[in-house]
Length: 264
Image (cartoon, rainbow, N blue to C red; front, top):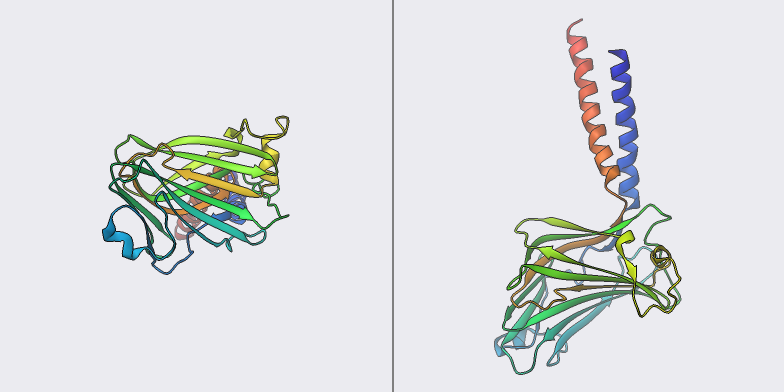
């Protein structure tokens, strides 16, 4: 019994450390608090929505740039672009909204699709270590819902840049009616053909990143809707699993102690 309690206590302590380390290492890329005022912006297509467009638009795209002040390694910019895919004129709309603060909604409808691009760039001459000294190993994208519209899935393409080197990873996101997460492991990214130095280690791009680009609905499916909660860089989930084990161990250890005390 004494040995069992010791094992439980060690597990609780070790796993608690795992939870703390994971929480400390998580790097927020975007929690979508900008502009954070309940704004709604529309890409052109149907005249009904044109009065709601508060920033400049063109026939084929809508774009806005905000300060990237959530970046922990120096200020930069986030540029959001809704790229309308198809020949003009066509009946189409894309509605972008921050409702509530911390959740970005994208709703599209019509015969053509839209690609949404999120680009995060540091001020010139700056770079950031997305691995946090080797602790972080992947991006995690959190959605409150995903509706792939006319397709079976929504294509996501993620690209990270460091100078003239770039790594890229593409995946398909399935429909989700409740909150879901998608992991993009750094080890799955590969150098692109346009990288200036094909001999560079892909992981070094993450360690010295100056720009990131995420393209949603890259396959341009019509009628795609989704809502994003955050983009973060995190360690592997082993720390979180270890943390859960530790909590269970602590509960079990406490229960054993209470039973022993009650029994005299």
